Length: 102
Image 1 (cartoon, one colour):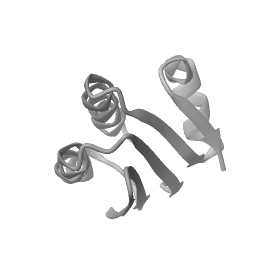
Image 2 (cartoon, one colour):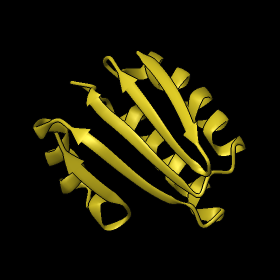
Image 3 (cartoon, one colour):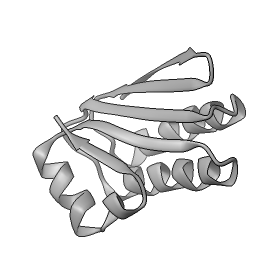
Image 4 (cartoon, one colour):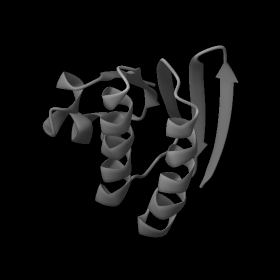
């Protein structure tokens, strides 16, 4: 799994690629902590290149959402594969933040 973080003014776009299993989820948490330290007003996670994600990966995304919410920052996910979209939808995550399919 790779993460590329791009910042423009107060917006951060994180482009994530590769499977997010338990091992990758730990690396993802480190990258998300970097995003939180930037104190952006808006964050978009582009998951277009993430075909598989385990529950620990979803947990790390919820961690990021919670930390951003403390700072009144907006959060959205884009490029979500159909199979992951259904999982996110079944967890009702679209009620917390914007989720857009690929």
